[in-house]
Image 1 (cartoon, one colour):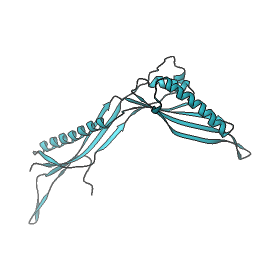
Image 2 (cartoon, helix red, strand yellow):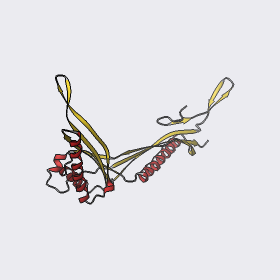
Image 3 (cartoon, helix red, strand yellow):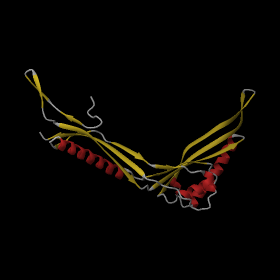
Image 4 (tube, rainbow, N blue to C red):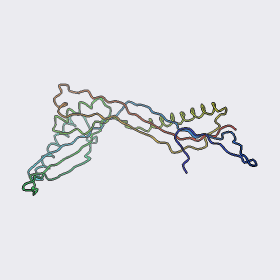
Length: 233
C-alpha cells in the first residue's frame, strides 16, 4: 500500500466506544515539498555529424576520414584538447535506387557523429563556426549544462524539504496543533533540464562574426520530497 498521496493528507485514529465512535485529533500529516532553481551553465556540449558519399564503401570511408581529420585539426587550432571530443556513432550503409521494381546499389554513405565538450559557454559560437567551415554538414545540438550538478541538486533537495516542513507547519497551525518531528521520508525525485540551442550550419558558416553569439540559457534543477510528520497531541 502506498504511503504517499498528492496534496496534503491528515491522519486520524478512531476509538470504538459502545455502539458509537469518536474521532480523535489528527496524529500526523503527509505532505509534498517541491523546489525549482536556476543555475548559469558552465559547460557546453556540441554534437555534430560528418557524412560522406562514395561509389564504393572504401571511397565513402576514405573521404569521411579526410574530412574528420580536417575537422579535428581545426579543433586543435582553437586550443581544444584531443580528450575533449569522442565518436558517439559511426555508420556505413549502401545507397539504393529502384530500377524496374528491383533495388540496385548505386553507392555508399558514411556518417560519423562526434561529441565535443567545452569548459564554459563563451566559445560555443566560435567552435560551431569553425566546425561548419571545416566540412561538418550537421550540428545536431548545442547543449549548455553543469559540469558537476551535484551541488545544485543538493541545494534543490534542501529547499524541497524545507518547503514540505513549512507547508506542514502552516496546515498544523491552522488546525490548532503543531508539527513534532519527521516520521518518514520517501525517496526524493530530482529533475535536471539543460538548455539546448539549434545551430544552422550555413548560418554560422556565412556569419561575418568570428564568434557568433549563442544564448546559453539556464540550467533548471527541480526536486520533490514526500514527508510524513508527527503532530503534537
